[in-house]
Length: 405
Image 1 (cartoon, helix red, strand yellow):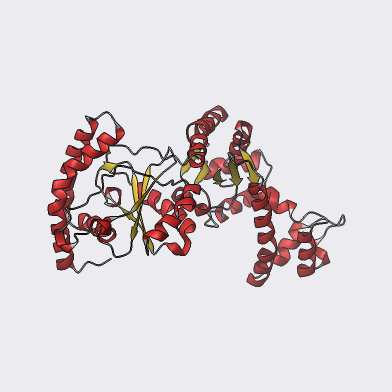
Image 2 (tube, helix red, strand yellow):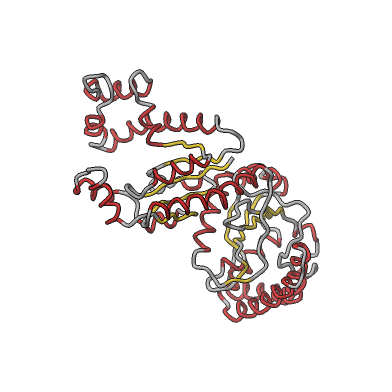
């Protein structure tokens, strides 16, 4: 199962996107519909609201009078908290019921207007934001929904900024053009990313990481933070810390377009126990894979035991965002060196430039190979000699700079 969090500002066209996704086979879970459903006449939710706020929150037919409830519930923080304590658990329980009832191979579309405002992105494998600029949304609200302009402006202003939405978005859907343009974008998203992603999760299949280097991408840190947030939810207390490592964590450094994340745990048993939780959120464990890890020859720095460099490696099932998840034990040399190497390259421009030259040679060697495993081996073989020296240099820098994890 794949869960997509769908959001966007009022008037952006979120409902149009969700309608197309449902036509293609998605299972819609609409937060606004659920919020109304749990307080319909005869429900326990409506009874609780009446108990908390009085009979005058009902209209003449016995249904909830929403303006009357708003006047009471949003007057102060205590009343707002009381309203949330009643409604939110009911919405959560109904949402869970609908998701549990979906097929195992479903792509579940959770339409949540305030997903960004509620900081809920980490609960989904992907977040899609539908966007149109504020003036275009205003025009739609006033001329298509007959909303008073001052009301429309106030609602737009009260919602998340475009910058906040961009930071939360794995997928940015521009709905500023013609309807047929939006339809084409959504259908491409469905067939090229959502359906393959869901299938990869079910079959514990990770997409291959690219061998070619690309220019540094300013979006890499934000992409890494979204992955880290999802991993934090899946790992819970099992993670000592979670860090963005590798070349994409070094500003301005060209790299393979793959986000490397390190989860630090207390022991290898803890690493193994995370396998199923990580698979469910889209990071299946890779068994017997070839790694191009930067690793010095055993014995350098007195760390001769190969077992102390052990890790568990997970890939990404998302065809739209390749990633490697390295799970290492707290304090072991591999765990420490991954953090040190990143910080050394951030601090030493000459070292970063030298590393780039090695990576370019390694990428060229990998490109000459046909098989994926062979290309990974070729990439690692070119880098290995440089890392024996870099390991010593990085630790020397650590001592001189006072670096610590």
